[in-house]
Image 1 (tube, rainbow, N blue to C red):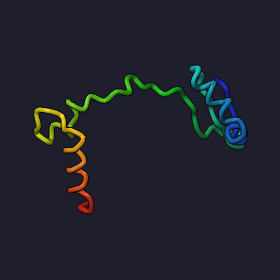
Image 2 (cartoon, rainbow, N blue to C red):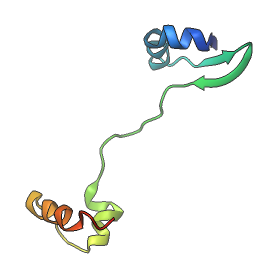
Image 3 (cartoon, one colour):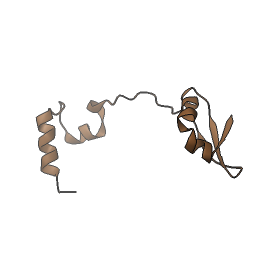
Length: 81
């Protein structure tokens, strides 16, 4: 596992990020003390199943909202937060 200083992180962030994207873990140190660890993200699937989401189920609808219906809900809710 590679170690990099905070200065290296600041100056060579893109290079370190490419190494992390390739699967390498990097320890970030400040004055010789480890303070952080850069690791590759473990993202399984970036797609959201809106039909089975809690928000959709709260609406109690059997079909997804159209763009116009969504816009109406947003406009009605503005200022009520």
